[in-house]
Length: 328
Image: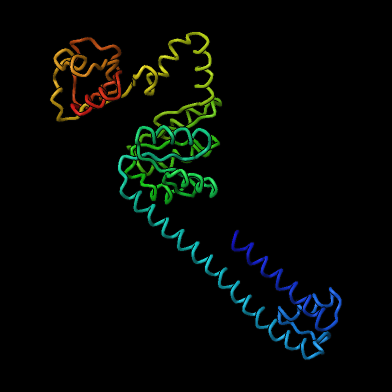
């Protein structure tokens, strides 16, 4: 925009300079001088109006040389801008492709509206790698300015999903605006990666959740239903809701609720909670245990055995949970 403004101002000065020059040297009117300047600058030369006086002819020679040079300069700047833009876009795309190629177990976030933006903020907060896919070029620019990896295109397109690394991804979150688009994205993603965890947004309309699950969604979420339940819980049991909010992030209580997976080579495998001494060593509370078969054990007993592949849902400070994570 700055270059275009400068070129526009220079062109206006060239026209005004030529006009006043002909008014002075050829005794023309303002519009007569403007007309003679324009046909000279654009090398039209109708022949109906020509310089008469020697000074006017010399001025015309310099005006032609100046105007042709100006036109050549303008075209060179336009070409330079176009080439720079294409090269910049090409290098940016190659850099992003290289970064995405290095990702493993990342997440694909399809749609960067209000919900998608909040999801990305939380993923960034927890250092989870992700790639944003959106079909709006302006939205993609906003995403890139935030420092996120982004692809412009339809998330239901096989090529776009493959470029975003869906074969190596751990999960996909589809939060575009319509149920139909979320359905198409789910179908495409499930076909490309049968093991992928897929979370899809639902408007809450009758039958939408069933169709999304049938299309291959692992989890279907209705933001409207969640918002309504949260508002109701704030009325019915506000203290419990506030406590849960605090445990979902490192808040005033310095507490965090996190999930930790037990690796196959962990020395805690086969031990019960008492023998593992999780509370004694790390001051961390095991709230629940999720088995590999999906069974959930709430408030597990002290003699509950820890198995390979278990997911421990724990409550404690960030430092203590991090320390326990090194043991698992």
